[in-house]
Length: 375
Image (cartoon, rainbow, N blue to C red; front, side):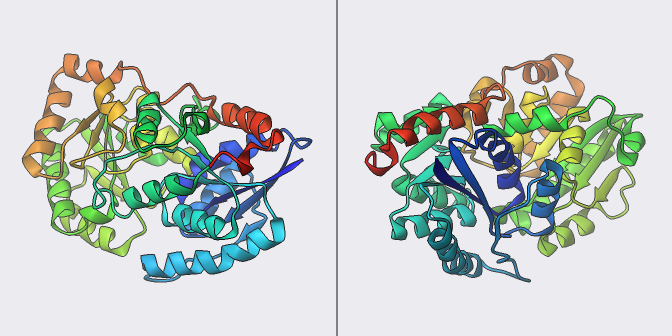
């Protein structure tokens, strides 16, 4: 039996790692599955754990008020070392691009513990966009012994960087696995009832590099779109970041067709996605989730580490300038042909079997002892 530690600490990580936890725990003769959460996000993380009915074996509780990247990195490094000492894992699985991911992988490197990177190979090759996530992904890639790439494009990125072909596995994205367990036909919510007499525009925005003037421009554009199209009802499950909240409240004040609500748990959010007409976001994971439900996504960023979605036609980059966001929204809200092009495009991020594939790969390769030799 091999001991596998899954380390994660933010809401998006939890959404994508919990299906993998559930899958690995179906194989108790092969794996001792240990869950370590860092608590980089607290309330939003706990919501996801509750939805998937997962109790962590370790909770590092690093979150504190007004935390910085320094605080999170130092806190995780110091506390995760004890987890490695006590659990003595054969492999640690980390996900994506967060500070939790980077710090946990660095701790493993210091301890000579093998790392498996779930959602590996996403790149913009611009260390400032997204910040600090692009650096985190590239740094984790340097120390990983298994790279679980969601798409062939991600695999090609890793190969160009010199990763060994036998260490890279294209599995699809575990985000699609999560949708299979959360979206329900009989779902209801008061905000959806309010929006039912129009087209629901679902908003998410929180990126660090968009804080300040870019976010003001984004929100002004959204307000203009809502005021131009009387049939639009916009719902924004607002991020916990106080800076984001101040900007949203300032820009959306007095617009009764834009509702700011508290963050939704993963089950609620996925069901809102399923009933949305159009999604505006600067998030990463939603660029994978919404297309799986046939929802066009306008990405309020200049770059994306998910270019497959742009190529497939499920995503469209708008940047953060008001006129560009308004133009693309108007195009989709007034042209059924343009809308259907995006809604019916094939999602490139897999078929919802990523967790099963990763478990099968680990069962085969860990039993052969490859984690110790393939770096």
